[in-house]
Length: 144
Length: 184
Image: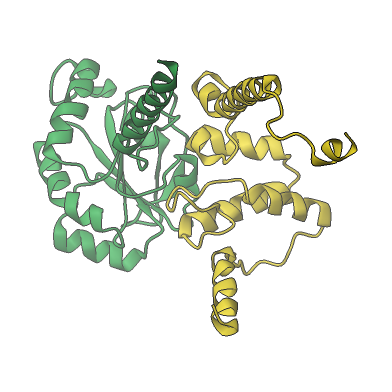
């Protein structure tokens, strides 16, 4: 790959990170503004389901951003906003769904698979440790 | 023996999960509103902005609330069927005109027919958020006491009407046309 195509390739990697832009100025309190930014990056846009509402330019995403911004500007907490969204759209709007019976598999699977990996790894190690070293160390041979 | 069984069982488990995953419709997001009281709203009417339409108008009837917009292709698709339903006059159909342009919406109704008792004009989409609307057309079936009985996302067809709506309406009303509380 020559230098120019490499640069093009690397810039393409960053192509998907564009954010939707709202006309409103940032919220006055920088702490609330950053809480707002963090939250909209965790809410799924139901129109374009693999985007967060922070990424999406869909009209519904803009409406939800406006609504969340309004609520947080009026002092609503993160938990209140999440509750507001979940009662209307269900858990699916959250990129981090809560741990409950329907999501046990989702949250548990990585731990379970890691456990299997550890067991397999331990067994392989144990078998290998029982095997004698095949090649004697050449330095030891020289001292003999 | 285990040497062969483990990869095969791993493959089977994975295949079952993937087959299930592929056969699900990711567009189908069950509404948390079903079985709960419908969100209250009051909005200006589309055709007559001085008067409002809202929860009070729906109360006492088994009714449909249909979310529509002129920019929505599926809404045009189902519109003919809604007009037919309105002619059958089994239950009142209310509209929620979502993020639309008033004059375009009014000319759409005058050229394609108006199946709605009244349409609420939700220019900013705020009531739509309360109702968990994310993709028009959506149709809510509401009980007399204002409970959401069912929600259908996608154009309403005769098939959906017969299989999903009618059984629920008959369970609720007993007979068709559905008597309202006032007429009992």
